[in-house]
Amino acid sequence: MKKIIITFVLLISFNFAKSQENYKSLVVDFMSAQGQFETFNATIDQMASMMALTLDDSEKELLSKEVMGSLVDLLVPIYKNHFTEQDLKEAVELYKTPIGKKISEKTPIIAQETMQASMQWGMELAEKMKKYMK
Image 1: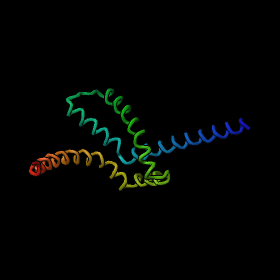
Image 2: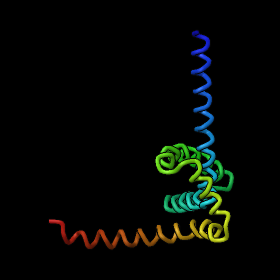
Image 3: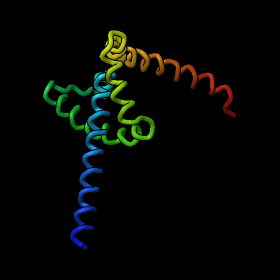
Image 4: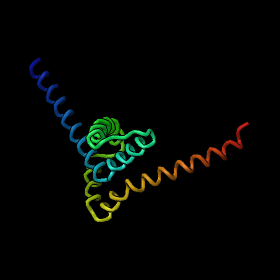
């Protein structure tokens, strides 16, 4: 009886782990299709520039792989709260369409431009909020 229970528990554990890896893979596919990794790489470039840090291609690739892996691990539970596996599969298919590809291509550019505009807006907001400080 103990062997049956142990076998059953191991099978459930294996299936759960396999399911987790499948979902993580779907999240990576979705993020890739959406252009998020390019956006994150642009963020790395911008942060390196702000820190006056010069990275050669191999250093940048190593850093990117290191931080993207940890980022995906942080994001998987968040995506799991909002999207089923089927949702992600359908979204990846959307990004294979012409408009999906355009959105994917433009997302990193828009994110970079938005970041610059947001910084400017934030400085303006801070100035206006100073009026209300007592």
